Length: 342
Image 1 (cartoon, rainbow, N blue to C red):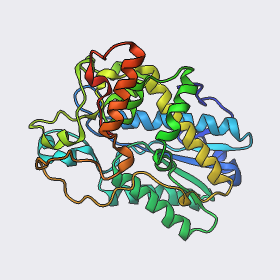
Image 2 (image 1 turned 180 degrees about the horizontal axis):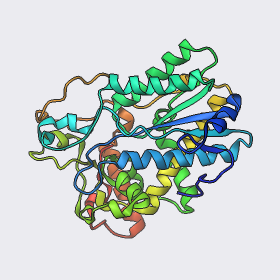
Image 3 (image 1 turned 90 degrees about the horizontal axis):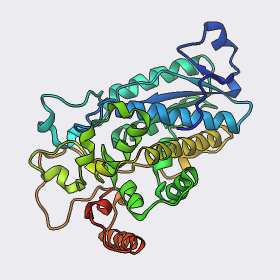
Image 4 (image 1 turned 45 degrees about the vertical axis):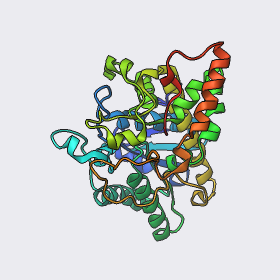
């Protein structure tokens, strides 16, 4: 994950500083960062706290970048809110009645984040950034809406959730960014698998192998790709969807998480310097999907998520397979290696 700001003079954890130290912070040159996590089932191979480990890692990468790129900026890091909203369980409710995610309603989570931010505003802080990782669209939409409402209520408040903007169109920048971090080109199989990672699949497994390999169960090595439409049609869906966890790689997962953190840090700095981030495209932009059926009806074409950026077409897959075969000199023995929806 690179150098972490654990002992930096301008890095302050709210849990660890005193009243006097909090009072001494220059409000005009301090960014308050509030990680918002999630306790969510991640199949049988990843821990329920995966998104909490992820948002903490992403936030530290964000903080390290900010401290390095703005020499006068102080960071106030708040404790992570561990419970989020809109878990993957809701797509197949009956499969998780006996055990699954622990979550809050969107309204409850909004109230919690709003009250925490309200105290910071009352204490004079004017740069406040909740940071998310969990991909549930209701959570991302709620954080965006709350930030907009509080900006409208408090003149001079700079408050945005940056990760949603990072993910909008991020695929175009991610590949060259990761290649720079890794010092090597990504293989076609890696590119397709990353784009096709949705939940507890190749990317999140790779990320956890980098962050907490002791918490990753070895069964991931045998888990292949599950397409998005299969989430609804499998009789007993195992709790992950997307590119096979078997293709996970710790180095790639760590680099991808750090890439997200660096991009989020760059957006935070742009906001502090006066840019209105709300003018940017934000992800996810799904329309209200309403209640999810227990099982989607079988249709002629695969069910595709309402966000087209997250879908890899059959033509793209075929081109990737041919490119990989040409580079390897023969056909790939594992057809699952480049098979994924995103």
